[in-house]
Image 1 (cartoon, rainbow, N blue to C red):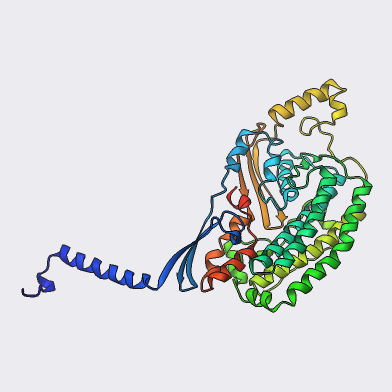
Image 2 (cartoon, rainbow, N blue to C red):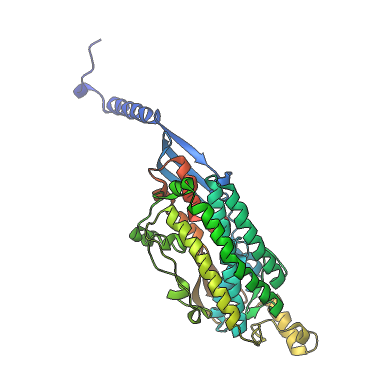
Length: 417
């Protein structure tokens, strides 16, 4: 048969030939490439995070993070419960630092209501936030080591975290999901004996942290697995919206405790650890130094803590004391209204954010003057920080992906909400 000339061929036949050529090229590419699903059930993804990796051998060409496996509709749930009822749900966001979540949410509600907790309550909140930062960073450092094969350090960091959880138990009656902060203050006061236990923990912490650092910083395998891996530049870190240690590991000196102060942080002397390399090792160093600064902050907080009430006396917005509820009719009525219908803040909208262990945790609340938010949006640092993953893992090995995820320290309860 005479060969068909292109100029004589029907357009549909030409298109079919072209499609066939494209498919052949695709097949040739896919002979050398592979799509790998990492997660959502994988210990190194730090939760139910799924990564679709496009690989050439063991080199990552591209990746797509898939979030949402732990989505519980927390922002929508806020519309159907009053401001007080929502406090326990904030424990389940970054579940490695529940008191810090409590404080962040309550500060947003208090800003909306136009009230402020007594000084002693604010100092207690600062102490709880910094203890939570130490506990969270201990898990981050230990699990990062575990991800790349260092088992001992994971046990040592969990030992220090257990001491913090024991202090939480003493302070608020719960080790993990504390629900300790209240609108207008905290659930109960901290006695001098407990403050002494907190001081004892801080006094021994520096020595334990030095021990952990000697184990890791002198380990050649640990250093080489992190140095130069997952580098993000100063400008890219800002453009993506990174916050917390991931941002400061790229040289950006930004910390809400200094840049947008809240509570009594302006009265406390502490530094913001910054490293300029932007790699996984830099993010590890930032977390180590941050726990040192947290220990300094806690010591100053205990020294400066004033006497006084731990709950604001504002019966229409703040729960009255139990002794008053049981003995006075007005407080009984206020308690009934607050518990069943919630407080009635003015109409409007606010945004309030705090420096949590993972980064900037913010709450945007829209109020129509009812006992519950009309709308609420949670700005979760883990979700924003995970946006950097595709760029960080590109060009690295599959084994490096594990180290990069660990250096970002995401918590999927917070990312998915």
